[in-house]
Image (cartoon, rainbow, N blue to C red; front, top):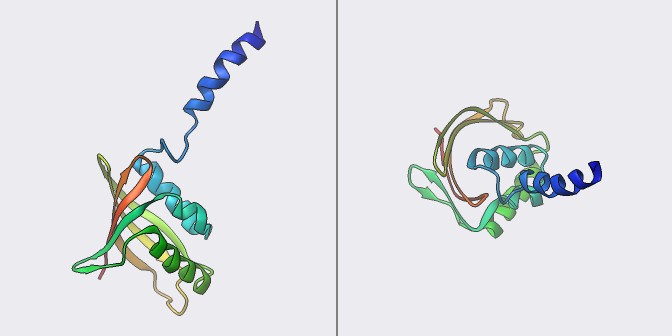
Length: 134
């Protein structure tokens, strides 16, 4: 009897376990920060769409796409071994996650960087990311 129940329940439990494909937008962004802090480049990049759009507001648009993110973050992780981000506040609206983030551990910088970051997440992937900072 118990074996029969475990055979029935196991597939349901496996389907309920969160995976990158079914994380909520907030869960995807949270996981992205965890992987950023671990300097896990491949895990971090796995949460971005291949054609991700990245921009700084106001006015500057960074090259887009996961390949460009790979170049940028590989260099950042290497140059800043103590790099660490944390979310201080969060607002959710549908596929959008808006966070106030603090980044510490930037080489040669004693002051943390504070930024407002807007993420758009679809199907567990970050498709757009806008950063606002002074």
